[in-house]
Length: 291
Image (tube, rainbow, N blue to C red; front, side, top):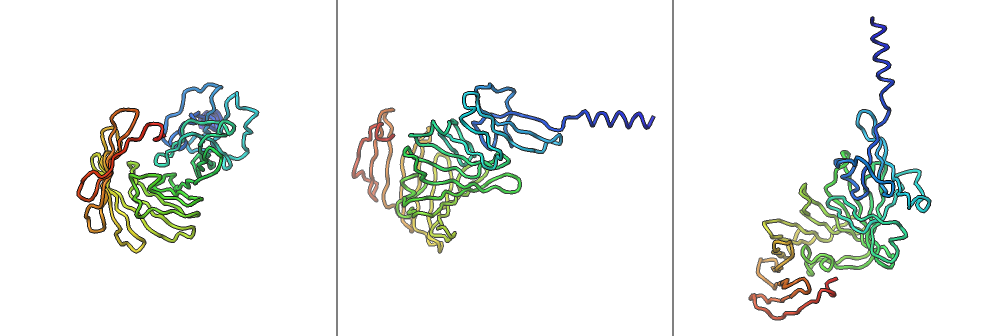
């Protein structure tokens, strides 16, 4: 009887599959495999990820499967650690890459090139302008549980962070030089809580801290020695568009402000305010200039 039971258990174990296969869309990079829901089926015309798991549920490997129309043009890599994919959109807070394209389709348009490791996690994301020149690179930081609360942006030319994001950064303290990087720390809700600007040797030059309220952002900026340089507040409308940015000096006294109005979809009105809240300049920006 014991022999028969052993044979039955042995046959059951041998009959179990040595791997479980799930397929995922390429629209989402990190969440698709780690926490996302797999697809029941994917058309052969669509590129997708093929995730292979051990019977225990542990991830064994991730394979990129090109679409039928793409086979032969894109060589399947032998190692996913060298897998590079191209996208039109990238959200580093959510580790999401959207609107996948081929390398050929990326020519002549701004795009992102993502490098994935063997787990399918995004390691680096390069941003290219329409002239195919890399402008900056996102470097992700993952812990042992494949979770992330920070990322770096490495810059390859002199820039001003306030020109890239005037809501978070101020012209008073936002210079970037080639080789410098901005390290973004964000909370579980995806909001950035601080940004530290460092050179290639990780020497700190200045940093920002952020606080969030209902339809409002407050930004404070400090030099490396923690000296407060100034602050500003941003008020948003119901559509998350900035309505007014008010700048303050290190003593909390208003310096100036910028107001934004959206009378219709075709234009935006920008108003400059002095330290008394009086409008000193107003201009209309046509929609084509905003793009």
